[in-house]
Amino acid sequence: MTHQTLIRRDGHRPLLLDLFCCAGGAAVGYRRAGFDVHGVDIAPRPNYPFPMHQGDALAFLAELIASGEIERYAFVHSSPPCQAGCALTVGTNRSQGWGRAHVDLVSETRALLEASGLPYVIEQPNGRAEIRKDLTLCGEMFGLGVLRHRNFELGRWSVHKPEHIPHRGRVRGWRHGEFFDGPYVAAYGNGGGKPTISELQVAMGITWTEVREELTEAIPPAYSQWIGRAFLAHARLGVAA
Ligand SMILES: C[S@@+](CC[C@H](N)C(=O)[O-])C[C@H]1O[C@@H](n2cnc3c(N)ncnc32)[C@H](O)[C@@H]1O
Image (cartoon, rainbow, N blue to C red; front, side, top):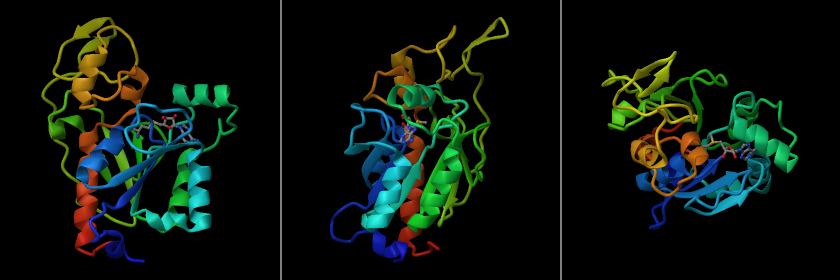
């Protein structure tokens, strides 16, 4: 099946599978780009704004591949958590008896995405698991109030990598005992100078959750809207691999 055939001409939006979906920062951007979105997360995510399955994302993907149901989807986004650095995941593992605490989720995710035959994205922050940095997006590219550099490995499609642009100033907050002011807020942690929930919502462009953890785990929808539009343009041109 070519990607061209996956771009539906019957009035329905192409369907996107959002693995490790959390509250749907990525999902909302893809929806705005033109997809219908289904999410998968191991934790209950009542704030996720689209249909979602609660369970292990990789087991779910493996089942979709085995049953052939994967053919319903046009594209897969994945944000596998970093096991060493993701407190939420460690907590989730403990509370739900999930036994993947030391598994390299990025490699497993990539292997299954390759087996799916679909075009895909794997997203990671800097300094986490190794992925190919085919694309790096920054909040300043979209005029956001966060910097939030995020890297994306693209499978079975490609896009011209946009230039990084200079930041307008610093990230507001305390560092080494000194307070720095600036146009960006820190979308992580709880320490001094960290933003309020409403500051975070405005800075990220995420209004549908007030859960700090969900806000600080998310990618801004502007990023996935950009990626979704780029993918759809690419597929419409019939240049997918
Ligand atoms: C970095 S967050 C994803 C953020 C999301 N892309 C967004 O933009 O809002 C990672 C998510 O993975 C979930 N998670 C961790 N292990 C998982 C697993 N094995 N299967 C499914 N979800 C998992 C966590 O509950 C968390 O919500």
